[in-house]
Picture 1: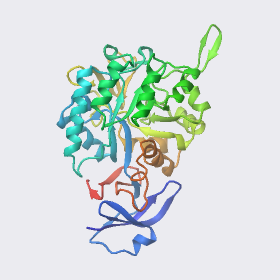
Picture 2: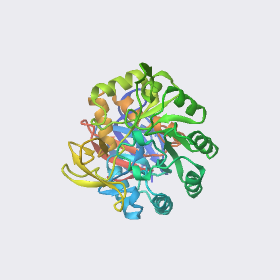
Picture 3: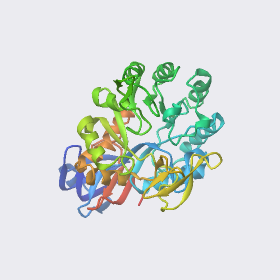
Picture 4: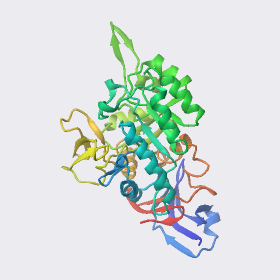
Length: 393
């Protein structure tokens, strides 16, 4: 059945159009703008002047609706994924925490089962993101130090072999002994390599770049910056990203992890084309302030508290992930960082689609791409979501 969406302001990478039309057929976008206006369709939807965007892509997401992917159950996957789908996330990478090898292997097996049974009421899940367990203790943050492993083949090969067809990206501390060999192995398997929870200095980051580490996970969070050793200043990962344009970054755009002034600095210094937005949301997403929930699995996760729209460790020593949703990321960037709506949308559609190799199917309102769509109102709140042309809300 063909569906014609009319009276929608189309959010393109470089502009917002006057109210226009878009045609969906067979789960794909088949006409945009004037070409769509001339088409007939069995179903017509009046967007009433709302903003129509590509479906949002979150490539770093742990959970929501009191469920965490580390729970490794079908119910947890479905609850978390559907919560974020209602907020515009039509494609996501379920993301792990530092955990025991048994838990990580269980999650990989569960993901494969869930993905095989998914239908159009679920967001697309093209693969997993392993955040750890190969992280630096000095930058562990809310990652459980009990489950940090050195990046040695005896630890990472079983995970990579078990997830051969489902692991899409791995985040690790590039300065750890063995991390460069891990990067080489990820490259052989066509898995995206990113630097996370790392104390690397500039020279170590550049060496990592030569071994495939081209992306910085949750920029500024769990990451080295300028410091002094014996009076000499050493650049960290933060400065490396500003200095070397070969690196891309992702930012937690919840308005809490990074203050508005810092968001504006990142946009100015890094540039829209190298930034992707993520939620880094944990099971507290969708829950009210005051709730105490576990970060990671129900069995072994660490307790956190939700306050002021973010999750803290109980002693408030650091954040413990966000409770953000993708539509909140868009609002934060427009209202707090001062970017345009097309720029904010690009950072959560086209940019992550390119990083994940999905841009031939997703990330823009263009003929031939999947009809994953979001309809926003004037306050940039979600009115309707489509997955492969199917309306969800």
